[in-house]
Image 1 (cartoon, one colour):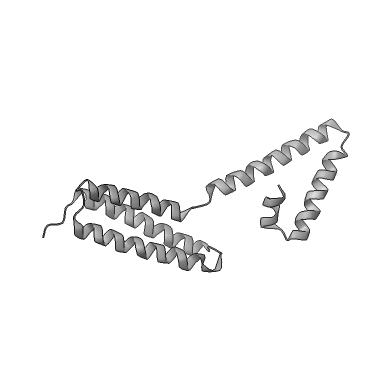
Image 2 (cartoon, one colour; image 1 turned 120 degrees about the horizontal axis):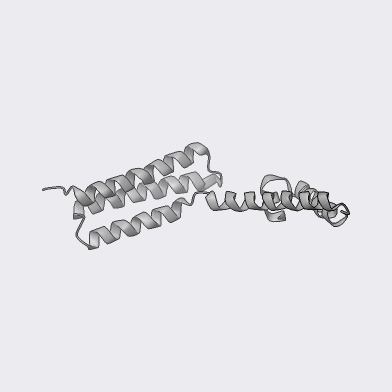
Amino acid sequence: MRKYLHQSLSPAGTVYVSRFIFASVSNLKNSTFLTAMKVFLASILTLFIFQNAHSQNFKAELRKLNGQVEAAYKSKKLTANEYAKLKKERSAIELAIEKALADDILTPDEKNKIHSKIVRSRKRLAKYKTNREIY
C-alpha cells in the first residue's frame, strides 16, 4: 500500500498516512467502525489495482500491431510496398513514444496523439488486407 501512496504523495506524506491508517486499524475496538475501515481500505486497494490495470501500455499495443503486420505479410495479404509503408509508420510511432517518455511524464495530449497513431495504423492495416494496391 505504501508503494501506491508514494505515487500520489511525497515520501514523508506516504509514511505519515500509512502509519495513521495502520495505527487506526490496530487501535479499534468498535466493530462498526472496524468494518467501515476495512471496507474503506478494500475500496482504496481496489481503486489502485484498477488504476494500474487501466493504464495504457503503448509499447505492448505496438508489439501486437507489429505481429499482425508480420503475419499478414507472411500470409501474402500485404504487398511489399504496403508492408514498407506500415513499417515506416511503426517507426514513426516508436519515435513518438520515445519522445513522449523522454521526461517520464505522459501528458493527456501525448497519450491522445500516440493512441490516434496506433488506431490509424490498425485501420490502415485492415484496409491494406482487403484492398490490394495495384502496380
